[in-house]
Image (cartoon, rainbow, N blue to C red; front, side, top):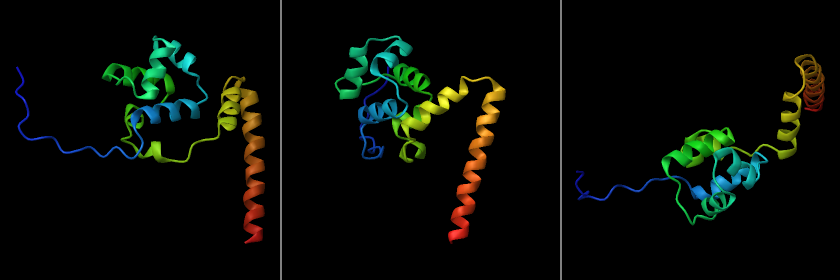
Length: 130
């Protein structure tokens, strides 16, 4: 049987954002509703709400399940990776990328080639102005 710790553990520095706020932010950045996340994880919407409000603490299995459903690492959800500190990706752009991924490969290539050309034009315009 484990013995109680005589010396308290040093505090963890997980940033200024509590895990429940991080969960809500990451879910919203990915354009996922509480209901959809709950369905993917296999729990109720009320449970997701309770996690996001900080009323209930997530156990290890739930952290893994939510991370997998959101397509992020557990470290990111816990605030242990620098990726969580990066600028959020535009929700409009993420929705468009998801729609492009649903297209056949030939149409994906055509859209990406067009996008690449447009980005090259923007880069060359910026270089010319400098």
